Length: 278
Image 1 (tube, rainbow, N blue to C red):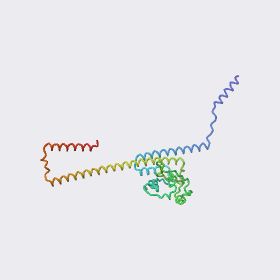
Image 2: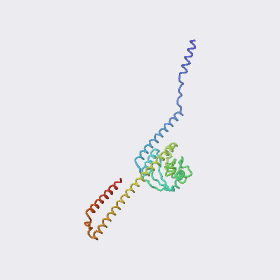
Image 3: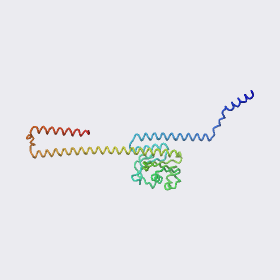
């Protein structure tokens, strides 16, 4: 019986003993390293979004907004080129309005036939991703330039508003630079959506400022018309009085003169109240 109890206790101790932990393998280390890289990329994306939102909130002029976005994207990814294009009315052509590599470029007309990837993104409203630009058949006419600049990939993300492409973000990476991943493409798509909203807000602000300016000009024109009318009436009455001689107000009864003064006072009071806009 004691032997049986001892055997049971030994079995219980064995069952409670945790199994030996397997040593981490090379595959585990690779997965951990990949996860660290992924988290670092997400951190950079979040920081870039915060900085872009901060830049957007400090300005309502669309050119300054777009230049800030191009600069932040270029710095975040170490790009060879990051440009932002806006479509002309009708969508037949586009203008380069912001550039990471040359901030002085602000309003440059671009021939879409030279940029088939940009044309495709603008026409379809879909993101165009070319992982190896030098081997893409649609870019063979600029293959030499791409080789000289050591270009690796090209990504064009349309800026859409209400389902219509109003512009595009153009990104080009170096051949020996970091790979542009699917997560990076999705991040740029988020930035494109923020850009569309920022452009909308800037457009509303500029329209409001224009309306206020037009209202001010209208009020000034109306004031000038009032002054001109009063000047005309004063001079007309003065000329009439000089031609006809004395106004002969002394011929009026005293009561009539007082009534005229009262009516003039009432009229001036009404005019002053109307001027207050009540």
